[in-house]
Length: 396
Image (cartoon, rainbow, N blue to C red; front, side):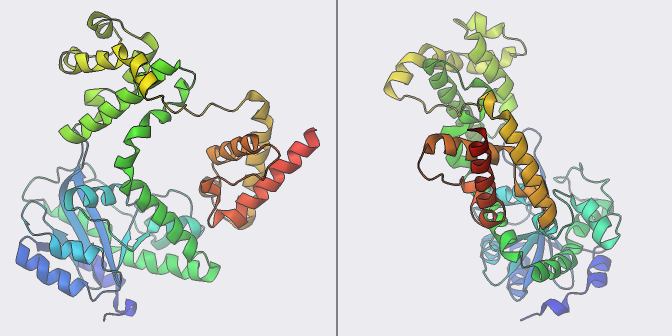
């Protein structure tokens, strides 16, 4: 088994100048067998996603302890060896901000990589800033200026240019060293388990995206006070739209954008003519989907009666405005004391969820929202709850 000490940063960066192409099934199988002996592999993907709901794979980059590899999705048919590698529990997959990469692996290759280390999340817990892109992180940690000129390249063209190849390879060449340095800080601070918990949640969110189709409409918080029949129409329209974009692999905006859904529910057209007169409603959308859209309006009352919609969470009463502000200040102080980015520790919606739980609990024990449990419970969840109770007592 290869040791992490066998990863040589300078060698990997130099190897990015001549990455190794993996362009047939036999080569991929052979490489995956070798990579399974590595404690760590660095991963990234390049894809096109301009007119489709799902990303179209253009390239998979991988770095082991010696070389950078470019795996060609356009040339390989048998992905089973890579699937096995991606779920090998003995091989840590290091990626940076991997939400879209994981989505690509899930949809295109029916696999969710595990275990994963997200260098963006890890860097935040190491005290290097929240949500840093790879370019800024490498400049901060390794004093490397990463060229991003090829970001919007056509990754489906063949052959790729030497600049594209080097750009793609460099995206993985630095990750092992970045991981090593982040992990050293996490070991010192004891926050490695926090990173694992946050990364697991990120992966779960991507993995469960399709399961949220039925509740997508609850994202339209500005429509919380719609009459029940219009709320049912919103729900049904969103479910229909979410299924259409997945089945036809089209962007949401090409079918019916969120803004147009809002306008449709507000205007409540009575006919195809009314629908066509909604600002920014394209004639092609009316022609292709107009009858479907109107059906959810015509059938709204029946739908609400047969299957009443769950309400959209109502914005907090204005009376809580001052409390939210004080709790945010309290959270900022805790974040500064703990050297954790406030954006990572506590969000406004977490505070609002806690207040809603307090309203619902009445005189009973208040339950922490799920987002304030786990590693956050002792750091901010329980202290925030105590502060909320203190503020309420002072107000009585």
